[in-house]
Image (tube, rainbow, N blue to C red; front, side):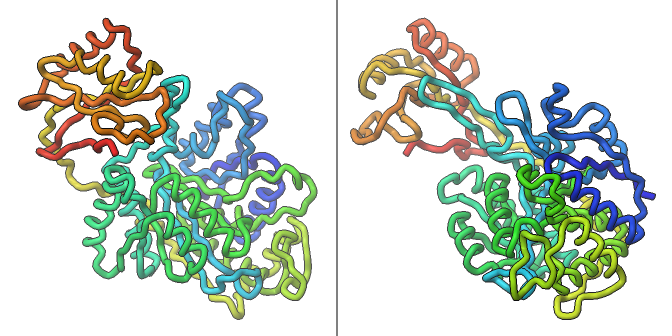
Length: 477
């Protein structure tokens, strides 16, 4: 018996979780279930992350978490349990298979079979934000080499193990040349280790457009956190319904499985919700823990149920569905078909060995670059006039080691020779560069001291360094 932690969740969560556990039990799943409260009831007890200490303890003990949909209360102080779990438990890989079930579920893309693999811990979802001035708030985008390498390697290992032919990276490296550029560089470095798998990339905006229009062109897509969140919902919707898609969140020691839809409080308690998304997540969970025999038994029975036209209200359509049923009746129909195979849709099969791609995390040897401090960007709040006025105020405060070379506003250079049409806020970046070679941190401290004595409100500094002789910073536009 494999221990798992189960949280029914909020809204429709308890009723679809009951249906899923019923199906797994009937199929012979070898599970020892530890049920924990999560979501609204726990938030109300003062636990900002939506899970109490006992719940976290259960997950760390079982290392497998099957979670129903959660409602996150609005307002400051409450954190999304999904985001908290992913970062707290190191669940770096989000995996969302998006498959069309033509002709039994309406879709414009009958041959769609795409897996979205999304980095889960970094990017803008790290939630590092600051209000810097009256008019400007920043959100910090963090992309690391190890984080990028882990998710890219996971995508290629997943493709190899599941006999997929191609992995496509979605990035925006034409604009974010350093962050997304690093991700893409690592993507092609690792692609060379998988010569049997085709590797290509697209800018995320045109990539999302092509995915929505021609999803059959894609096989496995790997991308950064924010892009992956958006793209995976697009992919799930165009299969015919977001209610059919499950999701896995994989880490080195723990894994979490969930439906991709929300808690749908408007239909909670009515017995009409589709349990399919959570059931497909449970299938992924069973594969993860080495019970692929049970996973295949459930998945094929579910396909046969869909094929037989036994549909819940969200996907039922006259002329396609045969019987419209509620949550429990749908689960009963799946149980009745355990041991049966779909007739027209492809059957599925899973190994009983735990997937290797869920347990390996090979990182390249770390390279320590030669780092040289060559300047500093000083961000400040100022509303005293035009850019030239600011230059006249700040320029004389340059030190012997660091000289003001440019001023920008929201990344657009406004001094010297700036575009007079740039709309300026009260948030300015003053770039000081070293004259005659690298400088020490003391030179920056001296500069900041001069700015402080002059009454200039600096809100943030970013050191400018070269790494192995190459600039580790972007230039103003």
